Image (cartoon, rainbow, N blue to C red; front, side, top):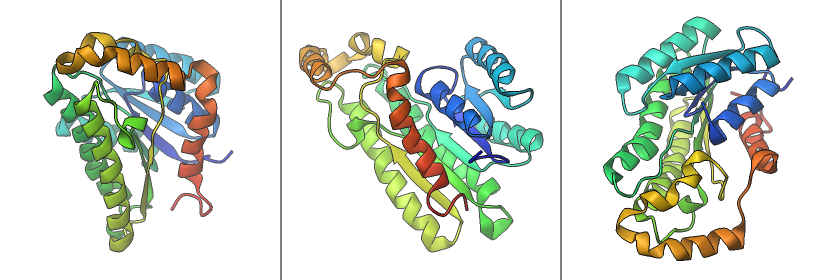
Length: 241
């Protein structure tokens, strides 16, 4: 299979898009470390995945992406268990315009923190074997959602970080490629709770609903095609570095 012998780390992978990404990577031959703050959901998922894809293919690690120490420990445990890290998917994210500092800390800070810390394991200049980093942004990273300016700002920043990091890695010879995915509306727990977390601009919930009705919401297998863009990003015409 395309990713046989490769190891992936996916943050925020116990549910939603992160879970689907982890499943897709396993289906394509990779071993996967699932990082999340929801220990119950994460452990249950790993048990299910190891039954479906074979023993010891998936590993759950409790990790808060706002903590440098926890990310470092999770990466080290992944390396000790699977022998390295070839793919990092920075998927962990929240939607909360009320506690907006935390939204910035997780959506943007977690992405940057994970990317910088995984360099230690991937950088070809220091003995690594290269790798791929995928950042899960949003259509709010290339457009705007007027009801949630902070969420929009974090996803724009993720796209900008991706572009700059990718160029810097090439110029530096790290052997690390970085891409961003920008999904539309997807039926997840995060999506279901939007109305209760709009905060300052909750008066614009109606406009947001109009956009949802216009663009639609992907559910279940309906977003399996967009997720295959992730596989293209992981493999590319050159394969993994």
